[in-house]
Length: 443
Ligand SMILES: Cc1cc2nc3c(=O)[nH]c(=O)nc-3n(C[C@H](O)[C@H](O)[C@H](O)COP(=O)(O)OP(=O)(O)OC[C@H]3O[C@@H](n4cnc5c(N)ncnc54)[C@H](O)[C@@H]3O)c2cc1C
Image (cartoon, rainbow, N blue to C red; front, side):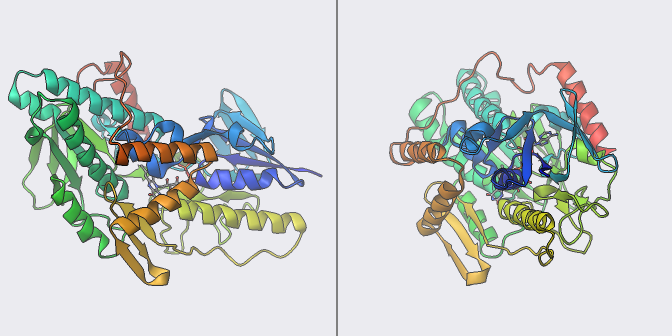
């Protein structure tokens, strides 16, 4: 009998599962996602800085599956009940399954600060990256029409919270982009008024990466004129100034109109509400085969998978892909009625981070290889081109990069009446709603 396989979330992990299950005649695979497209998150920072069009990093699920038509349902998962064996969706619908794969990823964590949730931007999805891009363009336009120098400087101050890979990559790219844009397109602005500030809670950047990545990133940021505040956390933002503080640090207030938040993620609300054991950071505890304890047919993969064996799995694309592949192997063994494979173990393929145009750092511990500069950037480019889903997306990315890096022709940003001008026109209702959501999440 054909089994029903339900994949929740079409990110890195979900897509590996759905595509493989579609080719297995023993199962009928269904994917559920709140968007009808997959997002290649590692390149979202380039959408925000105008290096890439969002069409290069997104692809609809129906396009992806066109050779093996499968079932896709557009809907938000609002409840998962392992005991009843049901998944509830909005718009209202209840689904049942023989095998379930929970791969819903994470959402931005504003640590319960409603103002930040309202006023800060983030890079977690395509819409957020587009909003950030519009907001940067808007800030430049506002600065261009300011008569007061201090007000102009506040519009030209861009703060980024979080010195992990996303924050560092974004700052390098933003600094290069803004210096050039001001020089080429805003003759009335003084590029000396441009200020990019990176606020990092810890004492070093890129905390998860081995040496020499943190020092190389710090050096590069300094050369690009980015100020780094170590040991500081953002404590407040009212749309006009950012307040930061830290243990043993004098509190600082930075006049700035734009704050981009890359300082943390946590599981979505539906997981927080789910009656299942969680790790200290809210991920779902799994058994050695990435299944919910006590449920042989419910798998968790990607950012949401946690374990209680003292290990902390990285929230990265390679982990998402490896964990999804393990869930597949176990499913196939169960369908065959054979032996289960060895328990899941993660193999770290290494890490890469870009430091702006033609510069990156690559660290491959298994090969004892560390290198930087243009060769690292080329390795990064080739790997990301290979990983982007779909030939059309790859060509779009290649063309965009050629235009940016060789012709210095960035993709422009639209500002229209729907562009929210944070700290000025954001409807109070939206703020209250966000505050409520944030309170619920952190309760
Ligand atoms: C800006 C940024 C840069 C990054 N850079 C890198 C990098 O350089 N290298 C790297 O390895 N990793 C990077 N990561 C991390 C990497 O993207 C994640 O680890 C990876 O995407 C996790 O995969 P996943 O399948 O668990 O979840 P995701 O890829 O997040 O996919 C989750 C899916 O679930 C859907 N979903 C969520 N909630 C619901 C719901 N309630 N109902 C229906 N659908 C839902 C979402 O729409 C999404 O499609 C980056 C992340 C970000 C945000």
